[in-house]
Length: 124
Ligand code: HEM
Image (cartoon, rainbow, N blue to C red):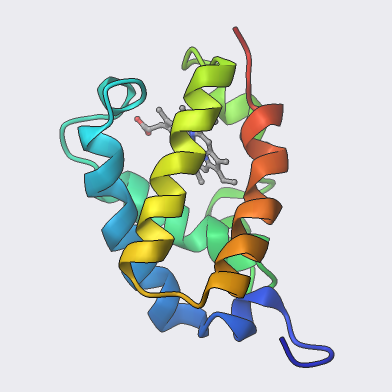
C-alpha cells in the first residue's frame, strides 16, 4: 500500500468492490450456517453492502448518503448471529477475496479490518 492511500484506493476502488460483492453473496447463500439468514433475492443486500464497504474502507460515504448512520450492530440485531456465524461470514469473505484474485497482503488487510465488526455483531 502506498503512503497516504486508503484501503479502498489500494484494492482498486469501485470496480474491485463491485467484483467482491458479486463474488461474496453467492458464496454466502451456499453457506449452511449463514446462508439461510438471507432473503431469496439478495440483490438489495448486495447494493447496500457495496455502499457500506466503500465507506468502511475509506471511500466516499455512499451508504450514509442514503441510509444515515450505519449503526451496523443494531441493524444486525434482528438476525441471530453467533461466533460461529461470524467465523462463517469471514470465511465466505476470505473465499470471495481469493476468487477475485486480490493480492494476498491486501486480502489480509481487508479481512483484518472486517473481523472486528464481524465479532462485534455477535448477539446470541
Ligand atoms: C457476523 C456475521 C454476519 C452475519 C450473519 C450477517 C448477516 C446479515 C443479514 C442476515 C443481513 C440482512 C439481510 C436482509 O436485509 O434481509 C445483513 C445486512 C447487512 N450486513 Fe451483515 N452479517 C454479518 C456481518 C457483517 C459484516 C462484518 C458487515 C460489514 C462490516 C456486514 C454488513 C452488512 C450490511 C451493510 C448490511 C445491510 C444493512 C442494511 O439493511 O442497510 N455484515 N447482514
